[in-house]
Amino acid sequence: MPDTPESIVPQGTLFTSPDVTDAREFFRTKPRAMTNKLMSVAEAVSRFIHDGDYFASGGFGGVRISTAVLHEIVRQRKKNLGFSGHTSTHDFQILAAGKCFDRCDIAYIVGLEMRGLSPNARRVMESGAVKVTEWTNAMLAWRYKAAAMGVPFLPVRSSLGTDVFRYSAAKEITCPFTGQKLAAVPALFPDVSVIHVHRADVYGNAQVDGIAIADFDLARASKRLIITTERIVSTDEIRQDPSKTLVPYFMVDAVCLVRYGSYPGNMPYEYYSDEEHLAEWMEAEKDEATLAAFVDKYIYGTKNFEEYLALKGGEKRMAELIALEPLKRS
Image 1 (cartoon, helix red, strand yellow):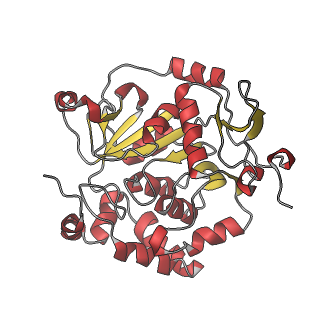
Image 2: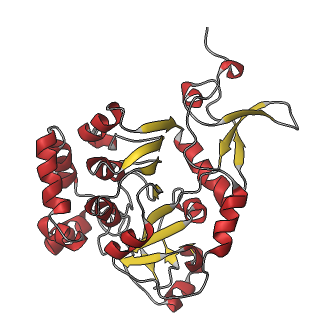
């Protein structure tokens, strides 16, 4: 007979503390001065991402991801990171290639949607080298939301009676009003996160065109936050349409100007994903030696994201991808 919710005891490890008091103390001491935070990607990664940190990546799958920061994490050989695998595809693939994380909250990983499964990411996860705790995509998003709200957990109906709940670190609770069984999903406060945006000012006021996915809550949950942006604009321009400001400056620690920063992923309204290069990644991953040479060429062998873009055709290739983007600006 199938398990009932009462018979399932979650077995997953809680990799981060949901202690709101500790988190509030950190946020209380975080500087809120409106200062110029513009810096290079290399400096941002060096200053704000440390070995052993718990890291989260914004965007959705291969859409509006901060490839430049992900490459730099690998390039600087950051190790023993925790990672939030929320709708994670090419970002997961990059960090798996660099063997950067040793524990992961998983919801959607390894698969690159219609492109298939990442052979190397699958090898990494099957090797046993990474500790995992399972969640649904919604549960991981709700963990950010709980942290953003400043509460240690949110009660949800999702996953009770399933193996996802069994291998999660959620807790079964009883609603004090109805007596119904619920799952308590713990707050997730990443040590550091990165979000790629369409435009930002030098202080960190950042705007996104289109769907924000979980990034509104991720920004508010993160102890340190790196913003990469397609364009730097004036604060006056930001103030002309404050409804698009996803992240206010006082949450941000670093602002990095990276044109085409989501490549080879898609940036809505800007450029389409480079399906040829993503297929090249997938093919290289079939053999470990071939993958090592691939990563040496495109990440370790380049000093920054701009050199990587140049290897893939630079402005000429980006013009082709701009022409392919179906969400055209009016």
